[in-house]
Length: 463
Image (cartoon, rainbow, N blue to C red; front, side):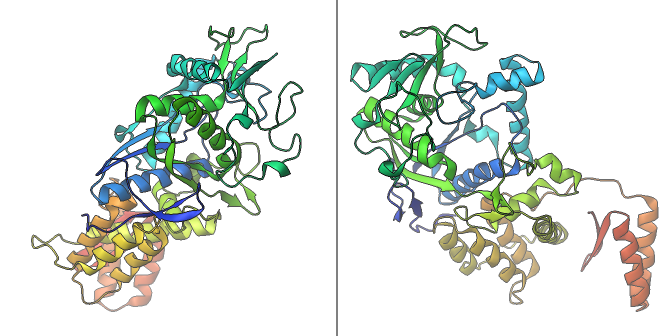
């Protein structure tokens, strides 16, 4: 569907919207920061993966081949960014009375289930696990040590950030303004506030996950895994790296520093970050009461794809305020589109209308402006100059990027009493008894079903 339109992306590294130029023509290499698998993902976490999936779909719409990597962090991510405290995986294992391997495997599979429900195609993505790339991480740390970028303390091997003068460029971090302990924490042996651990020593205690290394028994720091795995799978330099805005100050600046210094090459050309999903004035987090899973949405009768629709109504880089009212509105809109697509007959003659295709492409190529693309959908729905089958055809093309599965309908059994009520309502409409028709419609809806009047007859769907 490519129309040879330029693609523009907002690059966190420069703070500017830039024309996208791939390293290799027709190909995109993309790394998306993945989950630490010690607990379920909440819907705020999942915004990152819907964003990454939509970004991938945009490139594919433009006829690019995409190589995508989402890491699985199953070791090394401590409970804070200050290189101390417990490993989140080990802490989760203790919490649930399981092994570290059991806990990481359980929550990895839960994450994959979430991706399935959000229509994120796992078969198109590599999911490297940090524990499978220990040798690569040790090798990278050894290279940094050889070139003089590291030093040792009692608890680990640290990267000296002053050896990389551009440290903090991503997000334009004011290093001079950082206060001791405000973000990185206090370690009396650390030479500089922003120095970070590459390898942590076990320090006598027996961990479930620990490995021999040139520096002693221990485990890798959180940041080194992304640099080692992306180098192994995508090369020293690749096109795009994404993640949440919370990764900018520490994790992603650390990735850049260690990767550039180890590889002696540029790391990533375009950095892209999605904003938080907020509840009231706070971001959604695992440590607060606003922890909402996809399963929670299902308990409220909300389809995960309705949540995907809601995310598309906001720019990925803008905060999105969560409310049940907004989510219910998104579900109503999504269901209306799905019902329309499935109740409209497909014609063999394709539409020749390219105006909307061009407009849609211009929107999604403009730093993934999905709000305007969604608004365009409703403009099409109101366009009386288009035949219904043309609208359907255009919407299905758009859905290659939206990923809303508009042409899918859930299979379900319709009870006999619902069939009877629908028949009575059809009769009332034919007799122009609209009061009775409305009463029957309400009764059908209260039973958990919806009716839509189409030229082909009345369609019944499950709410």
